Structure formats: C-alpha cells, structure tokens
Length: 528
Image (cartoon, rainbow, N blue to C red; front, side, top):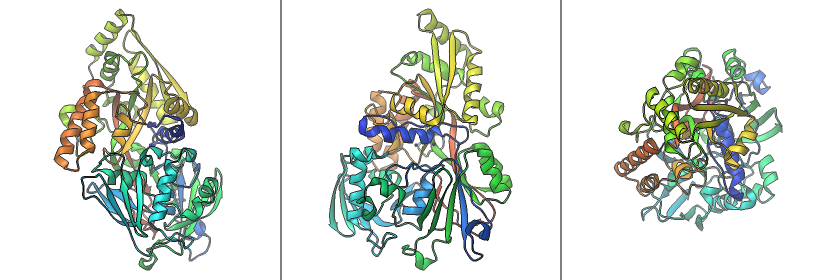
C-alpha cells in the first residue's frame, strides 16, 4: 500500500481502520508479485474484427470495484480504478506536481487552512447522472463512515466539506495543510456516482458507476473482468478511449505474466519486479519508475528484541544491500535510504553501511546482558519474497549470538498478523510513495494510523510536521533531511532495495503514460 520479490506495506489499527489497514498491507504484502497483460490480437481479444480490444493481467482479483475497498497500487486495483473512474487529480512523477484531470483546480488562499475544488463542466457519470460537487462530498463522507470499512478512511475522516455550487466544493482539512492536494491526488481521487452508492456498498462494489473511460460489463470471480467503452465519456470528442473493450484476467504467476506478453498473447501488465522490468527493456517495452520507499525489514519497536536500538542497529549492520542482487540475481537496486529516488534525498543521512565486526560486537553485548537477538522474520509467501528472506537468514547465520527464523504466511494471514494484530518482531515490507505526503506521516508519525512498527520519535514527528506545514520546496527539503537523520539514527526500518514499478508492454501498445506510482492512464492506451 505493494511485485515479485518484495513484500508488504503497513496499514493497521482501530476498529474502523482495521479493514483498511489490512488490505493495504496485504497489497504491499503482495510485494513485487503483480502485473497486468493484454492480448495484442484485436479480434481474439475483443471478438469482432473491427473491435479495438486489450487484455490486462492482474496478480489477483478485486475484492470490490468501488473506490472505498480497493487497493490503489499499480500492481493490483489502481488500473481498474483508472478505467472505471478517471482521477480527479493526479501526481505527475515527471515534474512532481499535482495536476487536474476530471477536475479543473484545487487551490488554497490561506496556507492550506481551506481549499476550493473546482470541477469541469459537462462531465457525467456513465449512467448520465452529473459528476458534481455533491458527488465528491458524498464519496468522501462515505470513506469516513466506520460502516464503510474504507481502506482510505484515515484520509477522509475529519474533512469538512461544503457544496458552494454544482461545480464548487470548499474543503477544510483537520488542520492547515499546504500539501493537502497531494493527499487528494493519491488517496481520494476516484469518485463513484451517488446513484450507485445509494443502492448500498455491495451494489456499488459489484455494479460500479464512474466517469472513467470504461464501464464494467461482466465479472467472473477469480477469473476475469470485462470492461467496455463508456459512451458518455467526457473526452469522447477527442477520440478517447482508444479501446472498445478491456479485459482484466487474473494470473498469479509472475513468470507466466511476463511470458504471456512476450509470446504475443497479451499486451501489457504492471510489475514491481526489478528483474522483469530490466528484462523487458531488452525484449519488450517498460516504463520503470523508482519510487520513494523501498523493500526492507520493518522492526516492531514494541516487542523484544527490537525495542532495543542496539538490536536494530546490529541487524542493519549485518545486512549488505549490495549482496542481494549479486547473490539472488533478481535485479534489485541496493539502497540504504527510502529517499534514494526522491528529490528530498540527503546522502549524508543514510542508514549505516554494513559492518560485520560492529554487528557482532553488538550481538555479543546484548547476549551478555541476557538479551540475545532471537526473532522470527514474518514474510508474505511468494517465491521471490521467500528467496529474499532465506538469503537474509543465511547471512544472519554467519554471526554468533543471534537466531533468526522465517515465518512465511499466505498473504491474507500475513496481513492479519502484521497489519491488524501487530503480532510480529520483524517483517519484510515494501513501500511505494509518490512523494512524502501523506504516506510518511501515516506510516511513521508516532500517532500515525498506519504506524505498524510502533516507532515513536519526537525528532521524526517534528520533521514530519514541518514537511507537511509548508509547500516551499526548500523548507520541505530541510524537514525531510531531518526526518532521514532520525530514521538513520533510530532505524525503525532497515531498507535494502529501492521500490520500482511500472507497465511492461508489447511493441504494439501505444499511448502509455503513467501517473501517481506507476499506474497507466487507461483513457489513452491503445494497440496499433
């Protein structure tokens, strides 16, 4: 919240947030095990000889197709959200700016205390009902209701909204927030028609109505979803969407996903596997994005042995990020900072470099005090994630006075234990962020709703507050440099690889453009 080798992310907590937390963590738990593909044969994919069709492969079926209980990750549900709903706003990774799509603008005149959202005129949902300010208000209020069990409830809870006119909504965040637009673009950007929501969430999830380029035609659970062109699409005068039909098929095996595209049986899929992304650049096409975040070891600071900072430091020093790709030949990109792919990166504030002697000294010191580092490493069971965990275990076994076990669980069980129950000592997680806000605050603030590791750091809290309180790039850079220093000093998360994600596609695919964290705009993609 994702991806072949990597694993989860965090998302836990209180009753109304548990479901959300679990799902997002589960998504990330999928790690690098995700994709999407498409048939490049127009007639075989779509049926009629003149029908423009594509098939997309996903690692798992959707739980639901409403904006509330779906995973906004390129490797899981976000391409489906793009197809059905279109983003109101999106984060453009090319220049780091939030830009309008379905909407016209989102502005503040008082430093983020209040915001004004303007929608495009003339936009309707696929059933012909108006896409208006009342629809946006209803969606955000639905996210915030405990009974919705929205995965994104934390971001909508406490928002105050007022409909000024059919195309204008004023929004008051819980506290002044000059970076509020980033949260809207990445968390609350997909809007469902009130006509669907008022029928109940079960109906909204199985019979979704959006303003995006496609409509759901059929859904065979566990197998495939078929989408057809929206005749009321707001960009139809521009010849969009370019496809008449989109089929999303479930293929859980990463190698099969890649080979399906390579053999010509599919057009495109999203992947977070660095190995396949690298391979695709030579054999197919790929748009690889290196995101803020990474794959690594999340420590539970509320449980032994990692409540002791020396234990966290010892394990961090025992790992050598450079050795992961060399040993496993998996294309991973070694790093010692979750910011290494970010413009906010401070090279002087990375986690310590590997040092076997110092690591052993700390293991010995802790053992002498009766605090031997003895722990279980929790991992979501995918072949790639298991290989990484086993390699890390083999490296740890080269030290004295430390014992590491690997507990590999089915993704849903992993999610329950990690994100909802916080029942772990250390866990393999993967994180993808478009930019620092709002994810770092949610995941690392002492009171963050998704702070699964229980890190409580006054220095980190102060830095996160400063980063959120300003839209000035220089101020934010200084704030996140302080945050990086706090992470490097206290080591709540030991990272060993950057997070990469993006579409892999055949040479017949056209119009590939990504937004947020590697998801393709579905309105302009086509096959030539």
